[in-house]
Image 1: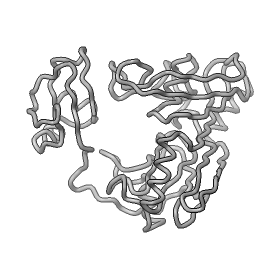
Image 2 (image 1 turned 120 degrees about the horizontal axis):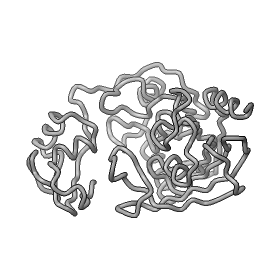
Image 3 (image 1 turned 90 degrees about the vertical axis):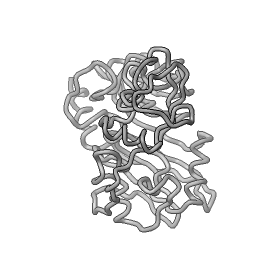
Image 4 (image 1 turned 45 degrees about the vertical axis):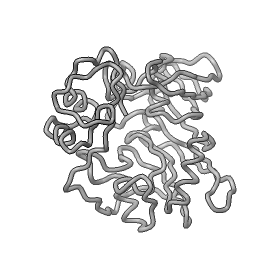
Length: 298
């Protein structure tokens, strides 16, 4: 759902949705024609001029010829039973298929590994309870059946799943620990990005702890209390300490193309069947360690 702001008033519907969905005009216009994009719950036309406070609802775009193909991919399975799979996602791997990226995703690999995955999130996101960015590494839990999926999703909604990240950030953070409480919503200047904003945003809380200070950077732990899109990256940029090597947030030139130094190192949740708390750990990946070593040797 997209809420139209005053600054967006007068834009054509198709142009606005091209930015939101990162699709070509022809694909967006096809969705509008098939009533997959609605304005205030009503069908509209490509050239409709948006008005402030319009509500735009839309279905996820799926290529008609798109098919999920099981693929044998290289990723670590940390734990598995009849209900869940805990995966240590490698650098650069997208979690699920999307426009222009139908193969090589974690979902493709999961389908090769297991025929039992939940279908609550639809045909193209089997088993996926939560996501991490393509160039964020580390742990996430996958549901093998709908009962497990619903149980885990409820924990996510209650913010009771433990998620701890390790991040390398630019600059020296003086405080030993801190809590960032700043709402996150879509960036009004660039709708592909998120930002700290009071406009149509959701509460976002990140707790951080300093692990090591270096000359030009700080190694920290981040614990998520909420789980907004790009939350850690947006919050750390907001306080003036963007994640090292982040190509999107922060005005720093990336060191290389391996993505942001952000790793989901701990994941804890109540098991859907045993109702016992389980916690998993994953070491920092090579890409992260190589950049960290450069800062440690300065």
